[in-house]
Image (cartoon, rainbow, N blue to C red; front, side, top):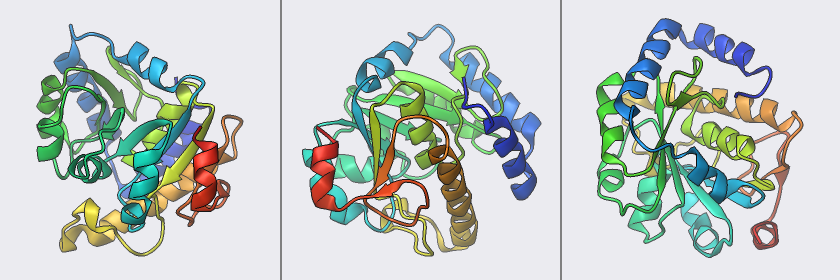
Length: 244
């Protein structure tokens, strides 16, 4: 179940970007059909997250500098979007990968069976959803309401969806690394030049969503990347203490 108030935020985003809510619902049903009969990965996510500190890694410009901290973190690591490929190439296997399958798919499809994949369905990625059947442990999510095996925990971009996920499953605290919300796009995101303006607009929406979430009751949210109002800013040296 999504955080109270998320539905209103979602509809604001639909209006802002001109999305088709009916297409979002169709994608959720399609993903539900693909995952029908698969083992429910929710209990596995719960065992990884509940009562534990969670580190959410994004593909922002500061991800490279944060890699040593991510590698050493004694916490459940969630890689959001293209950060997953960057971590896997660096020899770091996150416990959970949150993705809408847009971008660098090769490292995800070739990844060991260890991570739980949280695959998101929306109106623009229906042609990619069949890849969800390739993952041994897969949890489906959507943004226009739950459908069968597909849940709606809230969130818009891969990064803020990862935070909503950690919150829903009872993380004790959430630390963000490589999640920058400025005017630069990290090289790990592999965003084509023609899509940069749209990407920055989506990142700005993700920033607003996270700031709204940080104002709600729930586990504390910290960031070592900056660019956010609400989550507490911490120095890298303080991150290790938060992730023990």
